[in-house]
Image 1 (cartoon, each protein chain N blue to C red):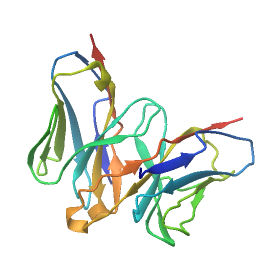
Image 2: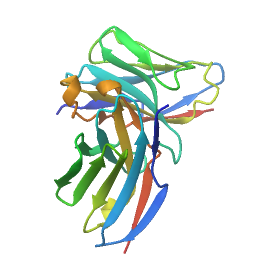
Image 3: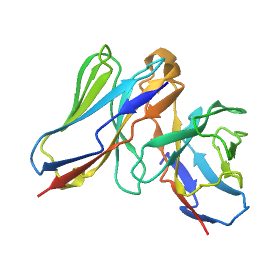
Image 4: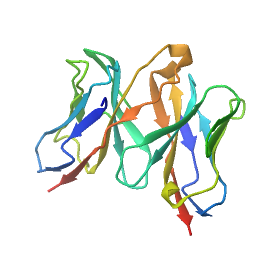
Length: 110
Length: 117
């Protein structure tokens, strides 16, 4: 079956760095997406990895290891507005649809 | 501005009633999706459509129905057979691009929150 796992909750301090991990077991894997979702709102796209390695986008970076079925999202210089849920999603069936993880609720404290 | 519009924002269902959630997009995307999100959980796929006049069941299709008569529209009906419909429903669309290089993300609407009266 298709399975994605993430930690349920994380807490970090403003200005710090936090790493949110995601492990997956899927068939027809076609890339790993990260989304940010504030409470009661729509998810918004953050990053995408299909090849092994690190993708950097400003304060956000994402890493993928296909052989290990592992990804992480790295958030630097944390701000209060980064308090949100972060969803890991695997493209499956060669891009036809997606499997989402349970989401990691990140709380950024002053 | 291009985007996805879901309506209504809040919806209440009575026992034995069918209700329909609207999803319209003007992004010219071929693929559209419906997800259900329960408190503290991730998104679960209800139905998806890769092209007009075609749709596929997702992981939790029982008690739901969809249609895709137009590229822009993908309405979801929550039938009386769905015994636990209270949830946050999200519609998404996507440009599939080239299947082997599908780096196109999904674009989400603002959601409909459905509750039982």
